[in-house]
Length: 229
Figure 1 (cartoon, one colour):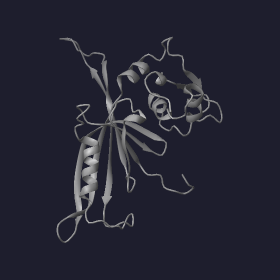
Figure 2: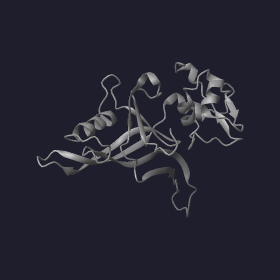
Figure 3: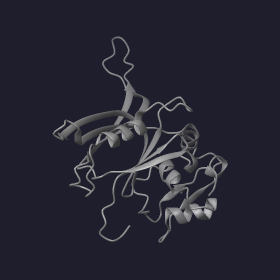
Figure 4: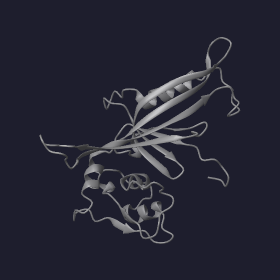
């Protein structure tokens, strides 16, 4: 990215939960970045208080998937991108189909990765609210605000690897040294730098472009289930 260039929020849409490049359907970039976004985390506990007891220790039951909410502006007036179009409906419908349409081959909606700056979020769209804001004289909409909700989702093999990080058969751990980047580390382990997104997601890195020296990075056995480019 050129110096001073604004990096746009990007939504990558996949048919498979392993987010392999072969299952990438399309990548969509925001016309304008969201003004705000919301991350919602929830942990559920069970009280388990016995009859006649004055209190009880809460017992952990489950960590709910995180929720990511934001709004995207879609505009066909040409004011934003210098490319006036008759209506914004086609772009809105395309986004709707990408995010929530039932996928015939997999019998479920698609999977998404949201990338903005160095931040990643992986999950599925659970809600899309479209608010048309501006219209041509003939009534066709030319501006829309799309309120989008995503729920975090972890593919089963990645979840098992995450829950078994200390297992002796998962040996790919590296301590970050000064000058290390995630693509370079991936190249050293997998023979390809293309898996940096999967590794960042497996480690829940909030910013994969800024690795802190001394941090331990876990490298799942991607080479067993994802073709190396």
